[in-house]
Length: 53
Image (cartoon, rainbow, N blue to C red; front, top):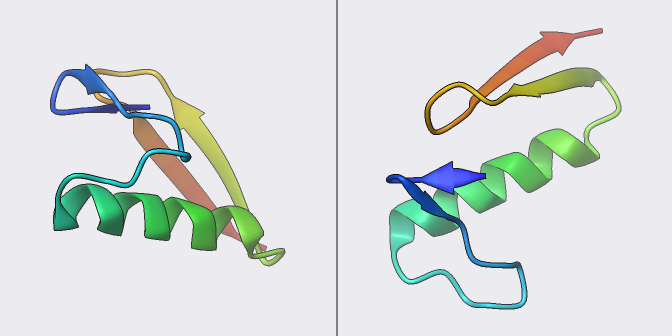
């Protein structure tokens, strides 16, 4: 995933700022929720589409 035109560091690296931490936390929560389908589109920094099942 891109963030500010840069590739996000791997999850083994602690995020440098609170915004990056918030994006990671949101992505983890969405990925773990079985009620949600998600698709990541590689447009610009990335576009995450969500659909509640």
